[in-house]
Image (tube, helix red, strand yellow):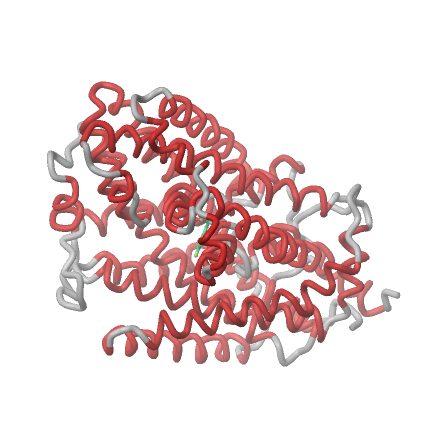
Length: 507
Ligand code: PFF
C-alpha cells in the first residue's frame, strides 16, 4: 500500500521533472551508457584470456545473476522514486544519503580518467587519416603520445597534446550535458548509437573478408573447458559485466527516473542488456579477425597479439593498419571513430546522475551543475595528462572498479534487498511489463548477488591493494580518504529545496 507521504512525495518530485520524448530515445541513451570502451577493447582481451568460447558460460551466468538482476533493481528504483540516487537513499533511510554521494563521487573519479582515454582516442582518430604513428606504434604511443614515465616521476610535466584533447572531450561533454535532457543526451544518443552500430557492422564485415581472419575468429569457437575450473575466469566474467553494463553507477536509476508512466520496464531492461552483450560479442568477431590477419601477415603468433585495452587500440591496431594498405585509411578512422562515439555516450551518462543529484539538492540550474562538474572534472583529469598520467590511471582504475564500486554494489544489495521492502520493486517492475518477474529475483538480490560480489571484492583487495607497491598504496589511501570525507560534506550541506527531505516512499 502506498501511503500518503509516498503520493505527496512523488507529486513533489514529479514537479518540473524532465521526461524522455520517446522509448526509443531512452533505449538509445541506455545502450549508449553501456556500450563503451569496455565493449570495444576490453571484452576481446577478457574473452581470449579466459578460455575463448568456454568463457561464454561464466559470462552468461554473470549476465543473468548479476547484470540483468541489478539493472532491474536500478530501473525499478529510479522509476518508482523519480529522484536522484542520493535522494532515493535518503528516502529509504535518512542515514543513507551519504552512500548516494559516495556512489556519485566514485563515478565522478571514473569519469575523470575515462575522459582521458577518450582524449587519447581523439588523438589517434586524427592521426589515423595519415597513419602518423609511423613504423613503430609501440614506441610512438608510450614515448611520443603519452611520454609516459611509468611511475610517479613527471607528475607535474604536462603533455600538451593530451591536455588539449582532454579539454576538447570535456568541452563536447559539457556542450551535450548542459542542454535539456531531450535536446542533449537523448538527441545525441539517438544519432550516435545507430551510427555506431552501422560503423561496427562495416568494420566487422570488412574484417571477416581479410586473409587470415579465420585464424582469429576460430579462437572464439575453440573453447578451453579446463578454464571453467579456474576461479579467476569466473571473477573475470563478473568484472566484465560490472564494467560493461556500468553497474552500480546510478545511471539506470537516473535514466529510468525520466521514464513516463506506463513504461514496460522489464522489457526495456532486457533489451538494453541483450543489446550490450550482442554488441560486444559481435564486435569481438571483428577484432579477432583483424588480429588473425595480423598474425598471417606478420608471422607473429596470435596469442602474442592479443593484449589489454590500451595496447590493443593504440599499439596493435595501428600496427595492423600499417599492414593493411589503402583500406586502413577508411577502417582506421572508422575504428577510432567508434571508440570516440561509444566513449562520449558513456561519459555523458556518467555526468547525468551527478548533475541530477546536485540540481535536486542544491536547487541550481541543470546547465550550471553540468558546467561545475565538467570544470572540476577537467581539473582532476589534468592528473592523467602528465607524464605520470598512465601510472595514475592504472591505480585509479583498479582501485575504483575492483574495490570501491564493488563495495557500493554489495551495500546497495543490502539496502534494497534487506532494508527496503523489495516486494515493492517487484510490483513496480511488473506493473506494465509483458515479461513478469518472480520471487527468484528477490533471492538473487538478497543472497546470491551480495555473496558473489563479496568474494569478488575480497579477491580485489588482495590483487589491487595488498599486492600494489608502496606509492600506489599511498595514492589509494588518499583516494579512500577523499571518498569518505567528500560524501559526508555533501550530506551535511543543507538542501536548498526543502522538498529534498520529503520521504518519497513507505518502507
Ligand atoms: N559501460 C561503459 C563501457 O563499457 O565502457 C562505460 C563505463 C564502464 C564507464 C566502466 C566507466 C566504467 F568504469
